[in-house]
Length: 213
Image (cartoon, rainbow, N blue to C red; front, side, top):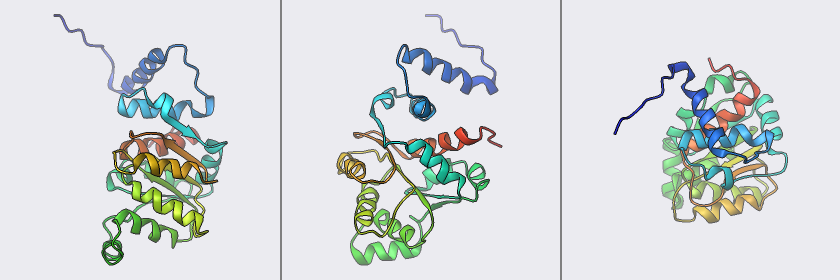
């Protein structure tokens, strides 16, 4: 069998990837405001299920972009997620990216309370009293704690990106977030991951300004 490779210049690989995604979506029409987010998730994962399982609250993209422009910070539940977010692009608007999972005080609190570090991380974020976007790609316990904090009136996130991957309480935690009045982008079902959480953040940033340097 003869294997033929596409001759694509390095700087054109991403553009060609998006052309392939568009071709394979065929006649499927995506909402204009959500299209880049959905296609970036497909580009990151090579999984076309994101065209169906990504759920968006009413007006969430516009609200998220406005929050970023107003200096919202992003809190993730993994160092991998934090690493994947374009921090320089976010910093243009005064925002920072945080992950508290390795912090000694978070580990201590989690041990004392018998919770996960992800749960303790959400409590630490809530105490910062800053406009926050939460990008959760790994820990359903983070989403459960966010739901509790919202119900208790202790936090009002500008956006929750709820895309943890896995099996135990993953589906349920996402459904809890979708029952709140908080703006959300959720990958319904078991699929997701820290890479998906980061790519949604980046999609929003690039919708504002596609200069990535």
